[in-house]
Image (tube, rainbow, N blue to C red; front, side):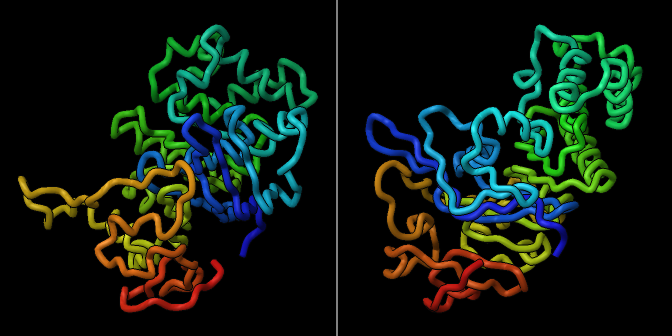
Amino acid sequence: MGERILEVENLTVDIPLAVGTLHPVQGISFHVDRGETLCIVGESGCGKSLASLAIMDLLPKRAVRRADRLVLDGKDILNLPESRMCDIRGNTMGMIFQEPMTSLNPVYTIGNQMIETLRRHRRVSVEDARDRAISLLEKVGISAAASRLGQYPHQLSGGLRQRVMIAMMLMCGPDLIIADEPTTALDVTIQAQILLLLAELQREFNMGLILITHDLGVVARIADRVAVMYAGQMVEQGSAASIFTHPAHPYTRGLLDCIPIPGKTRRGQPLGSIPGIVPSLIGTVTGCRFAARCPRVLDVCATDPPFRDGPAPGQAYRCHLDSTGSEPGAGATP
């Protein structure tokens, strides 16, 4: 095991609504080591983005965050005041959002924003901060970096804006970066370039990386470990190899079955899908969240499933059935 950068234990997010309390994140636990890429996957609305915002303490005001443990670089960050969290965000950990145009300030130049990021956390001169900004822009593949500092976000393409966001996150040399679907708004060619860039930078700077995505093709290319979320819960975790080779949870198997396979999926053939709809997470939710959509559902699925050891070392999944789907059994801590 490498140096532990982030530990999250039993993280829960509740949001009070007029019709009841929404439970978008329910008791999830995971960790990230230095130099490791953890991909959190799941369909839209499963809670993966809210989980990342909870780690950064950037939740909406009405949201209530609870956890048994939230540790970054060996330091408890669960109940820090906002002033201390401001020192951590952008410094020890940073976040790359889905749409860089809404993340970058449209009324300030790229140079203003990058220089301010470093000077907010480090005692450096404007000249030194500018030199670092140019160096990082070049490192992320932006040509004529010095001239880019005087440009505004709207003058850059989507791919360049995302590269600027990555460079900005590297200004203070963070130990952890959270990338929330950073390639969603980009075309396929640019997506591949951004993912390759993230992988190269992570190896060079030896950072921990949490990549949030719904694209299993991305996961296969970049992940060391995978955490699968469904309806606010972690339903399976393990190495990327074990998840793709021996998926244990019915939802994980359903996701993998939906991937078209070149040479096997014939033209015009219907693509795979998971029937049914995600359950409402408002109010009290009991039993297996996936039961209504599961092809192997049993009466026992009306009760909350335990975590069980998966077929590969370090793999765990939340289900009453064993990894072959044969019978209920005892649970195991992931």
